[in-house]
Image 1 (cartoon, rainbow, N blue to C red):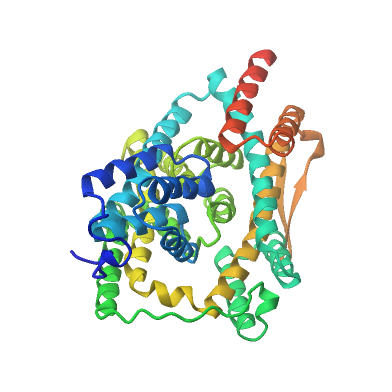
Image 2 (cartoon, rainbow, N blue to C red):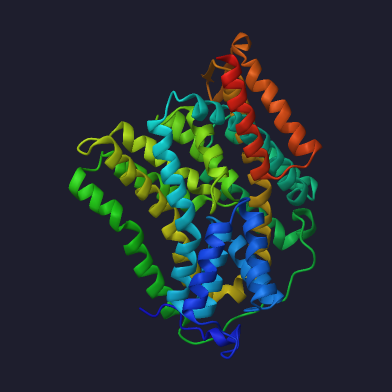
Length: 449
């Protein structure tokens, strides 16, 4: 199948284009070293692809990055897929995207198995306890960091506040919040662009290369079949009510509305997986995020942990470990398969998307709303990490949390304070913070015993 009809020589001269074998080695290296979240991963790819290998220039790299930032899903993995597509068409895009995911997915699978089998082991329990505190502070830091960049006008601040109230107080669905914010930004950008943080409209650039509609249609058709085939197979063989089908449907929906990066997606995923589906507890959700922070690859691999635990607990007709591995595979497949579709179908139109002023306004508004959604995640995590007894209460359309302050975990509060000092005072990076807090959690556990 030749999805990518566009000649890659428009971005990379044929003499400078790497061989496929060399490119595979580079993408495997990126997949193994891509710690530190999207910012670190994007910087790593820039250093290797632009500065060291000189496969593409700075302008072309930023062009690809801007396009990927418009899409739902993990932007760093999509960027790798897009650059791989530039190098070697469809095969290159598949190789780059899969190698970006695979190392982290295998590590996360191993950690999930260890998590299930090593419950009660002092070292494991202590490490997870320390990591919880690190995760709490990392999410708070993400709110501050993204907010500083995204909330450039009063309207954007208002959108962020409105998104927080909508999801925290009224429990409105995350997809609805994203759509509402995007529509607001889309229309405001046309008449009052400065209120949405936009400068003068960029020139509209159109790609008139022939065959792009046929290319996009082929990509959509093949992508949809590949995306939904495992879900359909599970429904046909196991029934529509089986947990694998539920996981496939939920994470497919999540993949479509996951604008704003992993933290925004996790805010919706955490509450749905814990409160709606009951696949895992709030504390287990925090554990999963802590494990994902320690692995290479996209942070959204935490979804694999959710699928692993959900299927492990509803294993029939499989044994628990087999079901858990299938659940992890289903969530990973349905989260990442759409990302390949977006790249292969959208690449022929990328120039149009870059120059579209209304689309830029929609993205700016969605990013602002995402800040409010991540703030909701930070508050939700804080309540469930620091207090043992938190009850969700609904009063008419309003949702609130009743907290038993007597159940406060003082050890967790102290460790969270230490983690805050490391991140905000000593400016420790993500991995370093997680490692230190895991060590402190182990020390605390052995001291208490």
